[in-house]
Length: 247
Image (tube, rainbow, N blue to C red; front, side, top):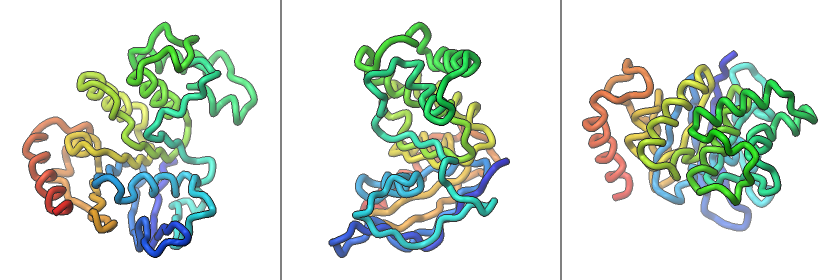
């Protein structure tokens, strides 16, 4: 079952300060679709994902409501990929990818390990299952973290610049793979890359430097993801909007 998520009048403030990280935020994540969020550094994008993932500490004050279309909470139904890979250094690659299964079920079946191995192969990471994270390059670690996220069978996926450490060719391939694997999931993706946002999004939003959220209409919403045709023209339009927000 696909799940829609609605944020209504959500505000986040670090206690002891007068400035909000963001305030009065309204955002609807359409069930089974990708929402891409663009914006300048420091505008609150990552804080929003951390809030939804339940990672905000008690030093922050949160107000507003986050609701799901099935009237259940978000807890245990989110896969979250942070900017850092956050691989556990004492676990090898395959155990890092299967971490959630181990934590929730106590052990990892051969079938789950095989699924993880197949996913790693799709990410061009064959034959590294038993290597430790410190034996990998930064791009390889990022791909392992992506595999761990794609392995989690959750209806909602939050991704914070998941392809940022990859070269152009791998970025293109893994974008396609993520769209395939996360079909019918509700995805919120943060990116600083306008081309990536246009290519992957069903819905496109821009966080302004004033911490306001603007929903942008893509030029042709009938084009299926990942979008490639007319991408250059779309990107120039989006860059102009982003430049206006920075100004």
